[in-house]
Each structure stands twice: as C-alpha cells, then as structure tokens.
Image (tube, rainbow, N blue to C red; front, side):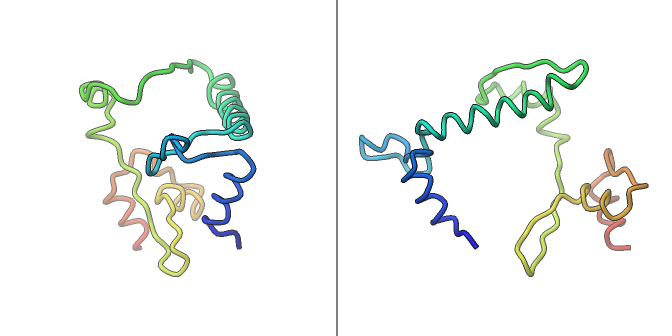
Amino acid sequence: MVTLEYLVQYAKQTGYIFQGSEIYGGLANTWDYGPLGHLLKKNIKAAWEQKFVRQAPNVVSIDSSILLNPRVWEASGHLSGFSDPLIENKTSNQRYRADKLIKDFDPTQDPDGWTDEQMYQFITE
C-alpha cells in the first residue's frame, strides 16, 4: 500500500507540488502546484465543470472568494442547515456518508432531507 509520505515525496520529486513559499523558507501546511500539478488540477477542474455544470440544466458557474461575509454563508443555509453525518468503520478507519450508505443498502430509500436522527434510527434498526 502506498503511504501518504511516499505519495507526497513522489509528488514533490516529479514537480506536482512544492511546499508553499518553499524558496523563502516555506509555510507550514500550504502547497504550491508545480508544472505537472497545475496541469492535473486544471484537468480535474475542467472534468468537474463538464460533469456538474455544463451537463446540468439551470446550473451556472461562479468564481467567488471562499472568504465571505458570514451573512452570505447564513443566507445560503450553510451555517444552520448543513449536515453530512458520517459513519466510521472502526476496523479500517474509513468514514462514509450515512445517506450514501442508506441508499446503497436499500435503493428504495431516499434519505435526502432526513434529519440526523432519522438516519440514525434507520441505521440502528
């Protein structure tokens, strides 16, 4: 199995990523994209846009700062209504979205809009 350390070392050696501000001493927990990393990121973004924006009706692109006035996040419902309950497999330490597990287990169920409590009850039954 490939370790995270090996993957990071490989990505650095092959020009995918570099530590942020590396030539000036670096900045912890930040990364800059090298030539190959830039191209990979560009291709992933293009594929994502093709799938989720261009192929979807009534969806448009916007390029906005992630640092926004908190009222924007509140108005969009991200502060009060956002919830992605996770279930952790204690053996493998993998985490899974509860709604996806419910759909995979029983395709007749549609947990979109369920409360966390409703998902918990379904899973424990």
